[in-house]
Picture 1: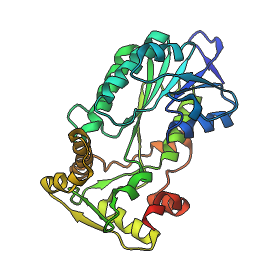
Picture 2: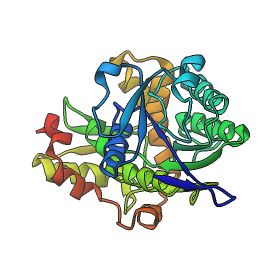
Picture 3: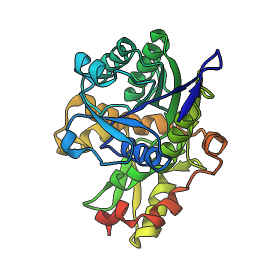
Length: 298
């Protein structure tokens, strides 16, 4: 893997992949290994790290700035996969960005969220916007992958007790995207050196589906009907009390549906195909190809 500098000098690069044990990071790491790319897998638990050709391990948590800086020493390009949702996720992101800058990382590819902004309806996407701003301010080169909702997770929208999706989504639509397509875009961007610097890509599926559409597709694929019940915002908060989740998490769940209702997740982009050369996978095809994703609904 080579990268060419502004002076035309060719230098060997080392890519860091964070979240290498997670759904996106592991997919990207396997793709890079298949291409023979040298990479450092940044993980919290080295015992869970995948064993891949051409890879080495760096141990750090986002929240531990000194450990992140040490793990990123000598890294040219970094895939920063957004952290698991938590009450202090933004602080984790900002610490990781600062650590990357301090370690001398040249380029950051960050998995953000579709429509990220300071006042967007989906509460957790505001954290993505703040992270983007921190990366911009860091002076590092960057590419933002603004992912839509993950199509892989749509079966978990279904209440297993009565096979109904409930939420205040109205007739809004969402362009859910397969995680494999997100990983393919990330791979292509990482392999392209600086060709995508300064760009933000909207990573979406091939169509915008209503929640009723999602329920119908899941019902068809699983062979058992799945319904959609529209809720008011108040009803949505009440119906989720049974999960005994913290307020910030419930607000995130509910605001996913209100963002759909507001039309903020309906964008269908051609960026997956433009970057990778292949079209994104639709929800029906994804679920048909991967019955493990909905096995709990069978």
